Amino acid sequence: MLETENNQIETENAISGAVDVTIRIYGKEHIISVEPDETILMAAIRENIDPPYACQIGACCTCRAMRVEGEIAMDEREGLSDSEIEEGYVLTCQSHPLTKNVIVDYDQ
Image (cartoon, rainbow, N blue to C red; front, side, top):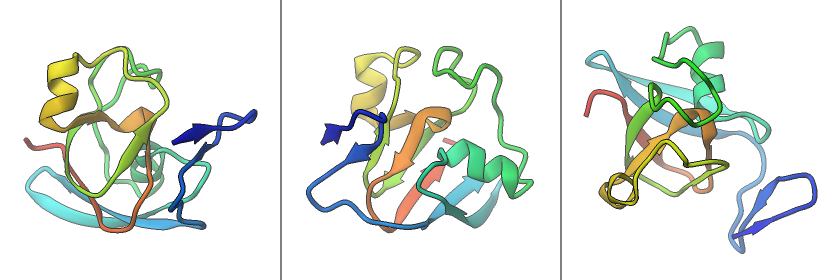
């Protein structure tokens, strides 16, 4: 994974354009489109899913969710411990899908 001068994330197999992401929250499942310049949280807010969040800078962990499937890159991860990341948790306010078939679960 590379970070460009504009802080854009690139990978060897990077996808281009919007990516459909499945969000599990409040016992329901939603499929939302995440634009390249958006985080998963921003897209969920835009779609009126009402995800939990507070600071949006990766510090409070209110937007923490379990990555169930797919690859995600986080801009910042200060609010998560190494063990939480190893377990699969991500901060959706800092998360960008890198692959298709991304699933995140706020309920876990």
